[in-house]
Length: 272
Image (cartoon, rainbow, N blue to C red; front, top):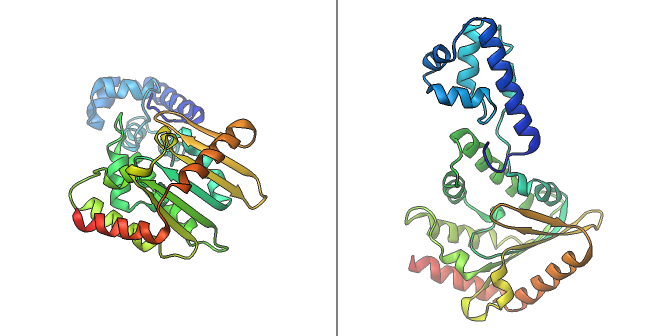
């Protein structure tokens, strides 16, 4: 089972796989015959029937014809579309969509709301374990769709603090990062967006502990999100919210001003 899929998605995979097997057996079609007709390996089809992999549209189309299902199997594809976001970030994305303020500190990567399409695709397509092309395309599109929040009315207020490591980290070929840095300068000109750089030399120890996102919604509910390798935690109250808010404040105080940050980014873009 692919990592990052929700429990509902996994249940859909298993149910669809079970239906594929039932229809195949009822029609007297062997698994090897189905695999050959679809152009797949025997074990690959087995993993889809067992629900360990998401059943592909091609497999559903081929079996629908072989079993004369009259579209009943193909119809299942609507419930098998890749999830737009990894499970660990799904709650946060819902909160973000309702935000009136977002304060985002990032350590190693450009925040998703500020990524170019090519930068986003490089990250998502090189995930580990690897994602299939359909999932990559869905997640890139969803990430770019989120960016509409930056200009959607009424305007929300966005404050980004980027560790210098996020700006110097190499993603993709030699042209990706210069274009990404130029994009930061462009987005940073919006009056509801501020971008600050936290240089190596002034970064406090707390800045090494990972990204922090603080959100306030239109109902004045406050949240803090901490994202990790395989886990994401959204806090709406209590000590964790307080600690992350304090930590973000301390980090932001050490960052360059907006004007100094723009000069820093421009200089780095010219060097790349």
